Amino acid sequence: MSTTTLQRAINNGLHVLIADGIHRFNPRSKRGSGARKEERQLYTIHGACRGGFEVRHKTEDDYVTVFGKLKEVLQSANTEEPGEEPRLRIVVDFEKAAIKAVRRVFPECSLEGCCWHLSQAWVRKRNTFGLLRFLRKREQKEPRVVRWWRTSKGIPFLPKDILHLVNALRTPPVEEEHPAYDPCKKFLGYFRNTWMLGPNEDMWCKYRKDAENLWNPPLVNLIITMRSLTAQAEARLHRMEMMPRESRALRRRDQIRREKVEQAMDRFERLRDRQFIITVLVGRYCRKMSRYTSDKAI
Image 1 (spheres, helix red, strand yellow):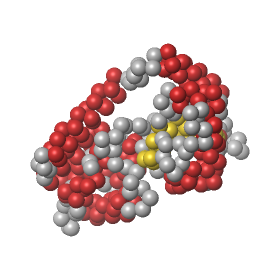
Image 2 (cartoon, one colour; image 1 turned 45 degrees about the vertical axis):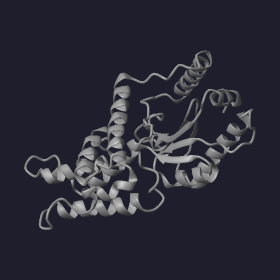
Image 3 (tube, one colour; image 1 turned 90 degrees about the vertical axis):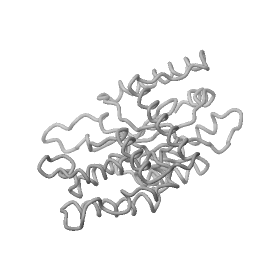
Image 4 (cartoon, one colour; image 1 turned 135 degrees about the horizontal axis):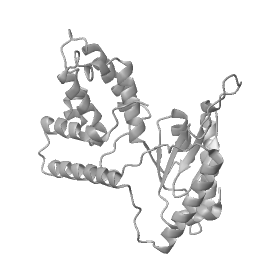
């Protein structure tokens, strides 16, 4: 890691670290070879600049080493307050070892999960419980389950203090005799035990927060890619130094998506201020926001 580069990043408003493992850096193994290269990952930390570590079968101590080194460089690069405890917003996937390590190394930072990884976890569990056939297959499609699932998918964009108004979290949408009842009940149990309790309960709410996702770029060559990322980071930092008031440009579709999410949450917040919140409005809002979360597992 370059202390100079990190110092420039801090001076230009470094405020978010995003960490995730990327598979696509590694080439596929040849048939008959002993090693399986594609099983390895390059663990990358994204911010105003990027660095990577390739680690297999990662443990909490491995993550502590990664984040500990990063913390040392961040503290040494902070010329205004050397050694000061970093206060950043850190976005990670929901890997337990990484979460515990970040909390150990960065106790003063806010920690939250990635919305895309959250939707992936929910969709995979939905498919495991056998709910997909009630949402997609024409002969088995159940409108009540479709409505219930759309409501559930929009919950990350809902304030946590009004989750009690979400009917979808109380009971399955069908009667006990219906074949979809047990899968829905299992998903509700999974949601309560995994996301309403335990270490993840404060990490997934995205209400009134800027969306930062851990998208893995489709890069194939490790050396070329890392050089490219370094060059891009240097160029971006130079541009920020030359034009400090310029905002970062997003792809048009990403900008439109962000604006729609923010507008929807602003409207919902105005309803909250007027105390117009009822169960029907909460469900309608969740179903509308569900379009901004992925419905496919990869």
